[in-house]
Length: 330
Image 1 (cartoon, rainbow, N blue to C red):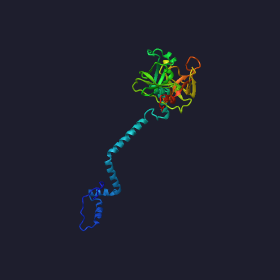
Image 2: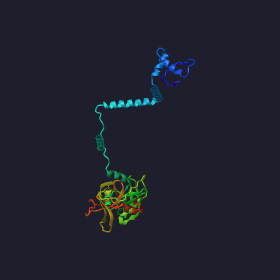
Image 3: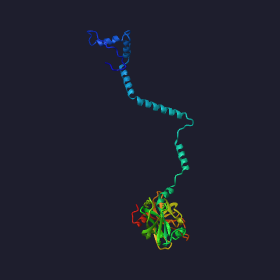
């Protein structure tokens, strides 16, 4: 029985008596003769379609029936894309966006909201770790109202937190001879502090704060092995009690020597820099553009008696400074 739906089904015929195997073809041939009725016409139409083409159409029909949903979805998507493309094509003034358009848009955006400079980013990175250090000369000294005078007397300076337990690096000359030491953290928290270590040959002191602010951040220290003259740096401190203040410059030289005004001590292996530093910057960090500490500001050179900055400052390399705290710097 033929199961192809493209063929018409004729009533079953019983072969004539005595007909052999060859009778069925003869009957089919006779059914194809004109004038034998509607059923014969349907059979004739079916016989005129090649069986291979009919089978292909049947398979296509079955496949379409099984995948009707996805086909309709695909057709809808193609129609939507075509409609959108046609709509964009006929929009007035519509054109293709070029690389020049993108560059112009970026430039205009930067002009409206410029990115912070490298120095600004370095300052923001180090600021939470910078402290103001005040040496109190007697038990009744409050340390207030005398910031400029105290800075000139080398009893006011800066420091940098190197361990989040309140360990601070500063200059020894800032706190030497003080009866008490007070530190003020970046968030305004104030605490008494004690000297827990010193390295006189490098004018360094290590302090430990008695109380800590919440979420105290320690600075990141960086080796000076790859530091080169011309590298950009910032100095952060409290010049004349004003601060925290930041100044910007470059490394001017390495392995410099400096003799203090009294001529009693010569500091060696110093970093020379030209970022502005004044009384009150002593003990503050010298920082690279990635926000890492490479030195502790310790002195300025000025042949006059005014003790103001003329473009030459010195910092102790952080390797020496960390040794004063009895710890590896990295």
